Length: 563
Image 1 (spheres, helix red, strand yellow):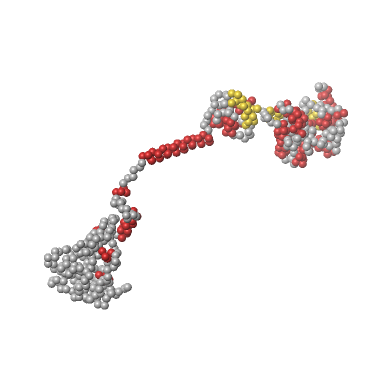
Image 2 (cartoon, rainbow, N blue to C red):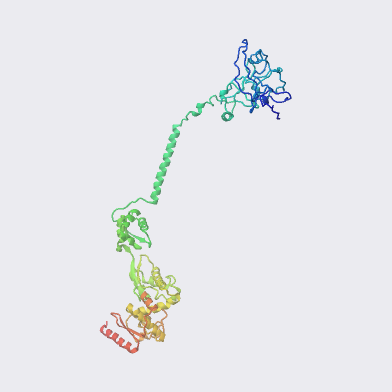
């Protein structure tokens, strides 16, 4: 509810027609002054000079005699003028100061509940006609901040309740208390009340020392037993980490233990193709040849020849030092294998005989393995004929190599060579057959190209090949000459009796013979004969007359070498 403001500003007494306005609307902005000192009731009041009446407006404070202002006087809470607690202030209303004219006004509003009940009680008698001005309440200081606040008891002499200097629930009036120096802000008071409530939830169980400022600062003592247990547990954890880490490192990188000396006994160790020095060291350690990998690898890294250790089976001794094991691996005599050399032109039968002789493998097992062409990897385009597909070369067969594995290695080598020469699969049987003839007839590699050309020329002209090598293969002969009966053999491999090429190879040609067939030496020759088997000299002829002269030279050599 709003009320009109007097023209002179706030602070004057309510005038006529302002009934219903609250006293606070008029007196809230009074300037503060120190209340007069208490006097003895028997002492006459000293005259007090009354300041000139001025407006109480905020903007204009010029003299305004039209509006009287409220003067200081005690609140008439009970007795009359002779009452010490309710009498008039000195200098007010006495003979020296003329009384103010009565100003009609509205009655005081009823006292609100709450903090107002703590103010000095007003007199229940009717207010006198003299002006009443709000004065600083006389009260006793409240409890210290942060302590237990209990409702203050009424004073014995006046019946007034002491004013709480920290309570501001006055409905807008500013309450001035004697203990103004202990006034705190509203935020600080609320924080103090919150802290008090947060630490005291049980009003019936109050600890007189719970609000002691020194209680929280008191250091807490640690129990020696708990500290000792914590240290023991921590030490155990650290020890476990150290021991476990060492064990893990030993698994990953075992200690570099090493045997001493050259070792004793014997053991076979297989080194695989592509093994590194560390791989070889682990193989030796697993066979108890060396104690650990480290010393062996260290010794091998200092010797460049160690990078050339060949795969195979080695005869080693037990419990050798790393350096001694390296020396034994580098010794060619330590490698256990059977080295077999198959010459160019050997037939399958002669190859099997050589394998049995050099590897101590029973010949029966080798011949039995040669019949299982699928197991030894013979390609389909060979038409099941093993002849010509056991490539002539030097082979190292390790102990425990089976006959099937030996033959399989040789067939695989032939296929690899044909692949490297770029021969189509459908041309490989023809190529191997021609190359076997060239390999059997040419004594020297440099003559292979011309021998291959003679075969091509005779085949192109429809002439029979008439090669003694085919007769020997058909009859099983091994001589450098043939007889008339042998040349009359009805074998499909007899090129005297059969035109064209035999059905397959008559031996196992080498790479030179294969290349000669792929690229014959150009020439018109139709005949050739080796006139000196000791030196391998071969004569080529275009006509039959030239060829007969060359045959005479061969017969002369035969006469000179009857054996």
